[in-house]
Image (cartoon, rainbow, N blue to C red):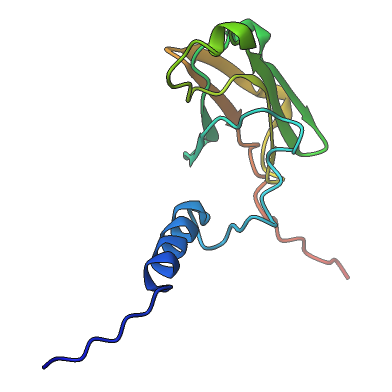
Length: 150
C-alpha cells in the first residue's frame, strides 16, 4: 500500500505563485514601487515599448481606439507625460454585453528621460492604434584637453 500525503493548500499556493509571476515586472531592474509611469486615477494603462537607437529614443504606446489628436504629450523637467482618453459606451449599453474586457476612460503615463534627451525636437505620430514618440539625443560635446600655460 502506498501512502500519499495530501496537502490541501498545495494547489492554492501554486495558483498564487502563478499569479505573482504573471504580475511581476518585465525586467528585474523595475519593480512596482519604482514604476511611477501611471497614477491611481487613470482608468487604464497603455502598454509601452521603449527602444534606444543611435541618435534617438523611440517610445511605442498601444492606444487603439484613441483619437491621436486627443492625446496630450508634454515634456517638463526631464519627464515625458502621455495623457489621453478612450471613449467607451455608456454603462447601460455595456450591461447588455456578455463579456467586456476592453478598458476605456483616461490614461496617464510618465517617463523619466536621460539628460541626453533633446526636449526641443520631440516628434510624435500615430498609425493603426500605435503612438510613436521619437526623442532625439543631443549631440554630445567632445571632451577637450585644456593645456595650462605657464
